[in-house]
Amino acid sequence: VICGFAGSTADAFTLLERLEAKLEASPGQLAKASISLAKDWRMDKYLKNLEAMLIVTDGSDIFVITGAGDVLEPEHGIAAIGSGGNFALAAARALIDSEQDAEAIAKKSLTIAAEICVFTNGNMTVEKISK
Image (tube, rainbow, N blue to C red):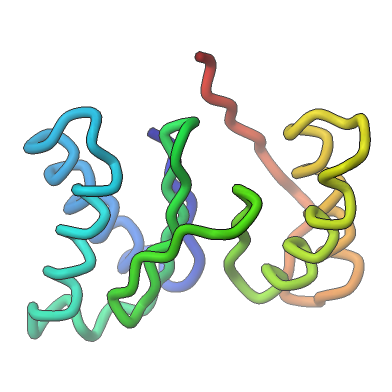
């Protein structure tokens, strides 16, 4: 499972630790673990104040877990979060039908977002899940 986050770093790591515990309790069930985390996020007095968003994928499913405790399954298997997320999402959707692979589309989309949004950093590390 690969996770990405936007928002407060400390808050995101708190949520990532909790997601990891949920995945250990439900191995191979990313949807169940994500929904369980979102339930905790909504109900826990401490977690409600955390300001972060997560993208999680296991290579098959992809989910965005919002700060409001929602679990979203994005259309077209493309997700983006953060200040430049909408720019990156638009670029990725435009490129999805091209001959480029997912890694090239992700890099190009993030580069475009960084050129448009002053809050988006153009430095990136791309992680891939091998099947």
